[in-house]
Image (cartoon, rainbow, N blue to C red; front, side, top):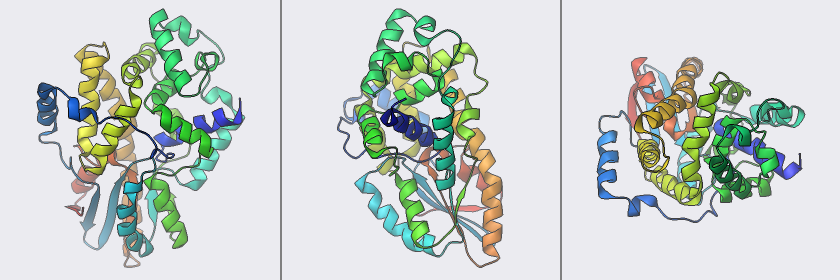
Length: 341
């Protein structure tokens, strides 16, 4: 496999684990600006009652234990600068910085992908053009070609990986290839801040987490992931601008509900099917991982308190809100949550 293509694959895998590449050059429209009023109202109604649905920077305190939490965006953007500047002195005084995947995990993931193509390519069984309808395969092959992946490679890729790639805009994929997979999102910038301050960087999960997230999907669930992702792939640059603007406005859970109502309108799937897909994605990509992160965060806060210090945790912003979000889970552990931004 050519090195540029491998770089894109590695970067896309790492995206799930909390890093990213430069997306600042992407251009598009904010889809909220032209959204029908009834859909805007429906999204607003869906946000009501969601815990911690707004905000990117929080403090969690329990007795002498302190965790500063920041919700990140995994691609580079000049608008990250104020948050980096605000967190720089906090990280410098912290006992450690916790991220989804640190430098060691990224390196091991890239090495594994280079050595074992079967991690993302199915060597046997029916190909995607054989499993999808002719129209679906035509749309998929064109969308993946826009992302630098020829049809002959796409045909054998694992469906969950294809669905993940469809969620990344073509301009971001091009940036990944140009950078050779070199990350530049807020997560990575904060890792660099910690390294400069000689503050330890700790991973919240193992390097191979991504391979277990979708391991037991049924063949139908695999294809449904692709079908649910295809409509938005055609206007992914607009999608990226819309979600990025929402992120920097601190409207975190609005990002999730936007995706839901967009799928209702454009995916061709029933509302029940869309909800099933999103519930599966939320369970695998967010809720299960959130729960697994609580123990290392608690242990880190306890250890840091012995040195009269706190810890900083930086991870994708969608992990913060909701009843099963990290903030609610910490609140259940007796932490008082304060929004800082």
